[in-house]
Length: 435
Image (cartoon, rainbow, N blue to C red; front, side, top):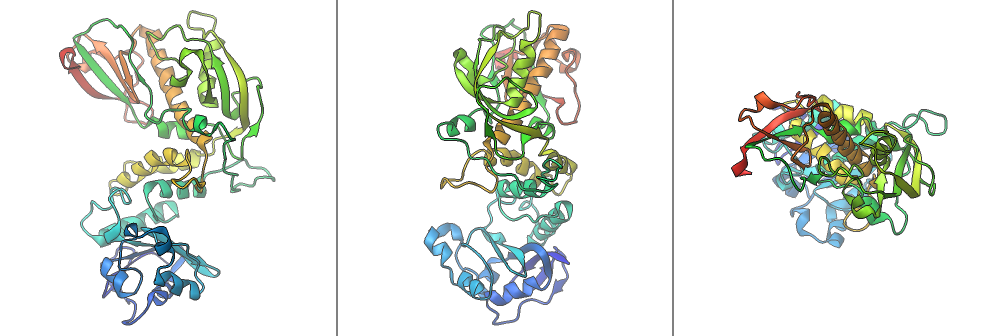
């Protein structure tokens, strides 16, 4: 069965093949084109059009970005489709048509797609190559590429995410998407910085060189291991911290006394000892440090409020699926954009204040917090092993001062170099005068 159909003004092509199949007949309207596509695409798939075909078959003659919302909902082709039993809301860059006994057809006009809508796919030579890659995406994941990377990432998560295996939930049950309570929404959105940590000590020993190392795809590494709440969080108040309880905690932290060697493990929001919301993944690091009995013991914290639920590695299948094709020459650009956009997308409602199909600021904060906490743990291990502390941290880039011009001669002991995700790779070496 065909997954991707590309229709021009005089031909149709299946799954990116250069051998044409029977196109819609001359004089066919948009409802006829949909019916023709529905006869060869099951249970869902992508219908791509050239701009000429979009005009010829009455789909649209104007890029929907040039229309206001009422005009996009009243396009004649949508009315014709509705009269033929299709359900559709409004014309968009990608528009989905579906209905009882009908496949879900995701319609896009390639000439109207922006580069960010099809990252890595529009770089190919022509529309048939692009159709072939969209077909390859479907074969790899079992879901169509229909929309921008954020939308596709959400679709993929809905398809792959696994909740708890019990009779109440079922293996593929849909979680209740989380709506933060009044007064905490912005705090949850901003609990973790999507730009990562930006830190440097007030003073550091001068060195003639700085060697910078990047942590490989640390968000993706964290997504596969972070416990997340499958259902909505419950208000659990000022309960004792439990690392197995996923969710958000309002915490008052004591000041971290070693901020000249590493940034505050509680995160940038904890400055000045003020209370802030943090995810379980971030508070888990502080709790581990608070239980130490040496010079690195954290001075403590107090939980003021919490919203929690049992935690599961909900996104592990999603992360494994992304990792599987990261190095695929054809799809790597698309899959990298998907995981980069996914977490910022699920952390906020859309521009109109509506909930997205997945609206989980607690998931986004949990994964980003885990990535930052794990980076902190790695740098702490290096520092306590060999006494080398970073002179700068910028997101996932870590710089160490050095007397050696060649970074190979002075890799800090314990800093694991590898192409594997979560490990480090050398990114840059600069002479101090250039820093």
